[in-house]
Amino acid sequence: MSLYCAQGNAGADLSPHLQELLVEALGKLGPRRSVLAVPPDQSREHSRAGELTRYAFEHYGDSLKAVLPAIGTHTPMRPDQIARMFEGVPQELFRVHNWRTGIETLGEIPAAYIREQSEGQLDYAWPAQVNRLISQGGFDLILSIGQVVPHEVIGMANYTKNILIGAGGRDSINRSHYLGAVYGMERIMGRAQNPVRNVLNCASDRFLRHLPIVYVLTVIGRKPEGGLAVRGLFIGDDPECFLRAAALSLKVNFEMVDEPIRKAVVYLDPNEFHSTWIGNKAVYRTRMALADNAELIILAPGVHEFGEDKGIDALIRKYGYRGTPATLKAVKENADLAADLSAAAHLIHASSEGRFKITWCPGHLSQAEVEAAGYAYGDLKTKLRRYNPQKLRHGFNQVGGESIFFVANPGLGLWAHRSRFEQE
Image (cartoon, rainbow, N blue to C red; front, side, top):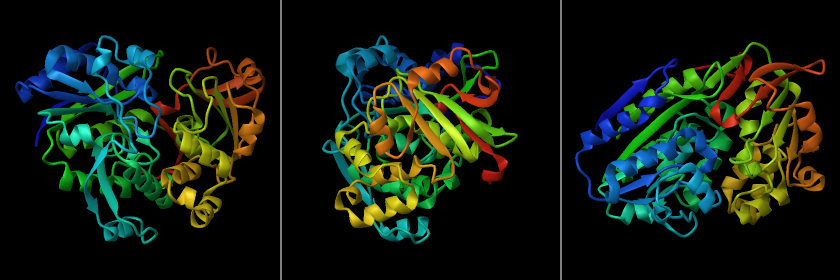
């Protein structure tokens, strides 16, 4: 097991050197005849995975046989989204991950282990499922490309999650998400080691060792003067690669606020966020910084649905964001929600548990739809006039005599007040 690249620090900007660093690392692997790239979709466009995939294509040429976006349960990428994110990579190389039917189960983590990791709350086995292209495609190199950043389900995104969840199957996604929700999102976010990560790493050790997977992991941070910088690039096939990236991400992407936030305004780029399923990162990433009885206002011009998947969308509309007790009760009493535990986990993750107010301002959902799902509704045009994303700076702003905390992209960070987050 090897670490081929470990570059960067909290003040670095590797953006101009990204291609040469990747090519140098790939050179250490030796020639390859059949390569699969597994990057994220447009909801992680800032990861620079599109650019890195293009560099891999330029390096390997015809030996790069396919690109499989790790979309998990998200809607498959449209041709225009592929062209935007993966400029220069031929569209015919792209494959669609079908999390319901296109997977193979490689093995199973026993229920006893899940019971231990969940502190006795869950009693089911966890299947290690991956897209058949990964397990049966005959590739001599699988490049798993993506960004390490604080994450609501897995603590820190990427590494084994990209393969086992992003390119995983229905049961592996459902049961891992539910484990994270039951264990407690605020006990997981920002932590590289936690029960969900332990399960995935255990599965990787048992069932993925025979596959030639190399992880290409970025750490992305904001520049003080505006814009984004690649703070770190880590390439390898072992845990060291991920742990170094996670340690840097915690320095770059984690922000401890001096006082609990009483009003936060989060903007969701319409090119990235089309559903509450993805857009509720606004809730996940700010919740530990919000004061009791605070208000979170989500400006979402591109949001037109609740779930990226039609079945999950229907479940969100049916059960709504009602908090943990109501969701756990609904799982026990309703077979449809019990059969889709990732939806149940999402309903828990994206609820304020009654502690603060969530006001959604979507571009394409009605007031009736938003309120029926358990949120307060705000008129987008009215809120955009008051809270203009083009004029607000990251952090605290004064708007019309009120103090608000502005977040331009919730996917790039994690915010907390020390009363709600203790680093281990």
